[in-house]
Length: 265
Ligand code: ADP
Image 1 (cartoon, rainbow, N blue to C red):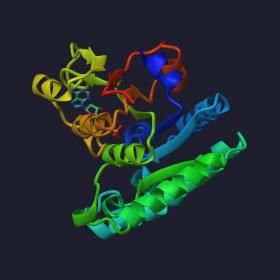
Image 2: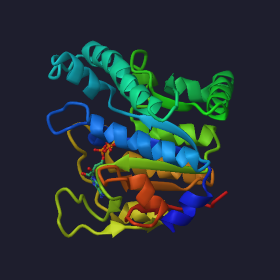
Image 3: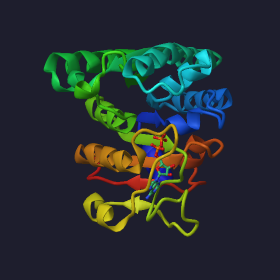
Image 4: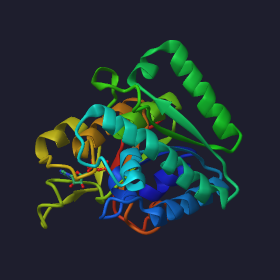
């Protein structure tokens, strides 16, 4: 099932969660980014078109400055994101350039998806970058995103981006193998749900636990993201980015994950 979906999907949006981008001590996990870029460049060689939605700007900011990690004020959080965004893009740029691939940065807000002219512009930029072999890397524009206009989590942002780009597949990489009947971090006997077709009934059956230190949305926003893309007939896979070579393993059916199947395109 997983490999079949991977094979037939040409346009893929991959969302990278904060927890897999950071080490235990809160610094950026460069080995992970290096491996991820290697896997993505392999997928591109095989004819896939990829857009990335990446979290981790704040962690990268803390990692860079080594201060303000405990500040709760919005202006400091935004300042950390502004610093970290550059660091994060530099890391992606360095690792992708080893494979001869350039990246382009798109910083978006909720309003951008509600305005017809803006969505048209985003779509045109996405198509142009991808057609020219450049990987778009999308994140929320934290500098202008105060509460009222915030998307708030990159799961939703990645779902909006996948829909707007008419992607064939959305992959969310987090630090768990998929959706479980209860939080796998708290319960050893939690069971993985490998295939979800009816999201609403699943929501009644599972227990939604807390997310991690650096996570923003938790499992609830991941399920909401699936709902958004499934509505457009786009399937979504939630998989573990901490598993070595996870994208290759998804292609070869060598790993477990959760696939949300909407009415496929
Ligand atoms: P990311 O930073 O990758 O977006 P989050 O921390 O926001 O990740 O969300 C993933 C976390 O959600 C998991 O690490 C897990 O602890 C938690 N979680 C809570 N309930 C569940 C559940 N029913 N199934 C899977 N994960 C769950």
